[in-house]
Amino acid sequence: MNAERKKLFDYINQVSFSINDLTLYLDTHPDDAEALEYMKELIPCRKKALKEYQEKYMPLLVDGTSEHADIWKWSTTAWPWERGYY
Image (cartoon, rainbow, N blue to C red; front, side):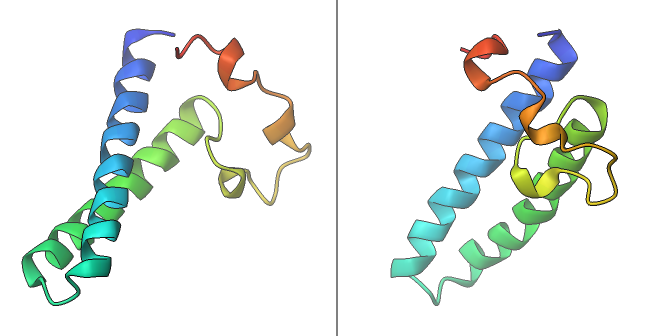
């Protein structure tokens, strides 16, 4: 994996982890306005990064595949253990 791709992939993982963590936190602290604002900042960042990754490399989520594609690319790319991420 080239350095630019890895950097974007790592960023997506970091933002996704933060969103998941905030989701759990907000489940138990629903009135925390600061946490909710932070969540609102992170979600667009993740969406933008996922879109960029999908356009440059491949979809990471099944809903990231194009509904207008000629073929179903989700299953034609390498599996995670074949991609060299780990």
